[in-house]
Length: 395
Ligand SMILES: *Cc1c(COP(=O)(O)O)cnc(C)c1O
Image (cartoon, rainbow, N blue to C red; front, side, top):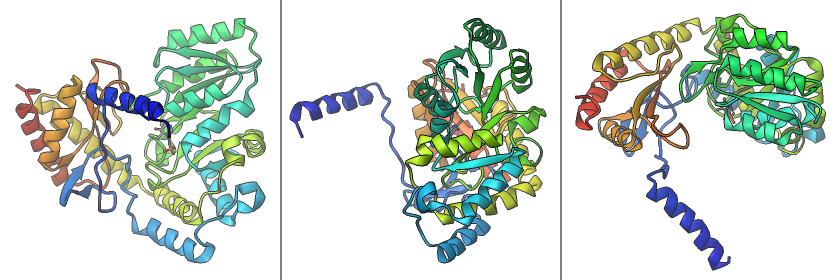
């Protein structure tokens, strides 16, 4: 490979390093869980999306193992050629039932679901209006469509209305509002009742990506729309967070929407079918989730306890009710120092800083999950207080 090209790449890497923005991956050597093995030590894990603690659940592992022996390992095909198992259709029907939609369609990941969604449904005559803090996959999916693009400041309803008006005055045929159900950096919920009301007033569709909510927010864990008692027209979500934490995404919605995505969604047509083990474990996850009021109660008790403990210790938090609880440090170096000091004390967290969050808003994003115990939380609170003093965050 040409030396100038590799020099150019190395210069970019050096820049990332010099800015203090290099991300390094720790290697876990145990299953994902409330505690994980890293560098030979068991550490309390406060940064997984394993909200219900299902990532190492025996029922999911059994279902996956059984599916591998009954259905084999891989499909070696996209769905429409010879890659559709009975299991795929069972999970699609089950997800639709769980979410209260006509049908659903599986993708390799929610990143692909969002990548597939917009281009077949919206043309140049249409408009899509997107929250400024939406997930990267929504932004990329919208870029792939020919619809006119509008953006509103995060959860700013006056701005959303201004964009809706602009889209209508611009003669848009169909308008789709796209939002995360929960904004993952802050743990803030989208203001769905107000968004729905505006969507209805301007005859727009509402698309909600509910990755950080499905399985635990709202009655039976049906997500943010269920939490607010609001209807979303189209939902996207993941099997990679609360629903087992492995892999896989979906779009759920009206039958014609799902049918068209099966015909035209490019990440569906040109990418391999999900393996049977993943699909069977997804079905097992839904069996658990539908009856998991105890796990949900535990998750939100943990969130209340953790939030109150951090506040008592003197940390600055963002307000909220979601199990994402960001500890605001404002400075990237402080966030990294805190995370390093916490790891020394047996608590695994990750610092978030620019470009993942705006400059001056560096933080440690902590996340609660049902696999943690009260003892884990007490130990982690003591470690936070100590690390806060050691790094000068707490005085
Ligand atoms: C995690 C996440 C995704 C990506 O999901 P994958 O299934 O891991 O690709 C998409 N959207 C949001 C809002 C997410 O939080």
